[in-house]
Amino acid sequence: MIIVLKSGTSPEQVKKITDNLCKEYKVQITTSLGFQSTVLGLIGDTHAIDIEYLQAQDYIENIKRIQEPYKKANRKFHPDDTSHRGRRAYSLAEAGFR
Image (cartoon, rainbow, N blue to C red; front, side, top):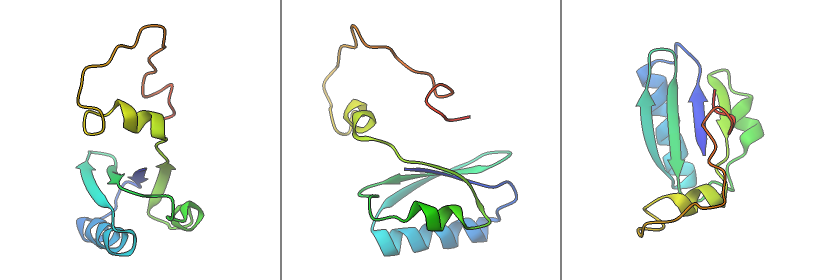
């Protein structure tokens, strides 16, 4: 799951958000700080996370669930080289990440 926080979210708020998600849902979070926003990458079982509740928070800009096919392309889940013949590769913009 990818969570994009709104511009202006303080580092203290980011820490509080990540601590709460880790504690409540037992996920690992990778934080990417940018000039305009902060992106949280959640790793683990995110099915129990209530997206509607999170989207109602004033600090959330966007949430994207990552489906199983994306996980299968990750070297963490599939360490061997893969062939992508006959399949179309999508850019991040085409996949909905803007």
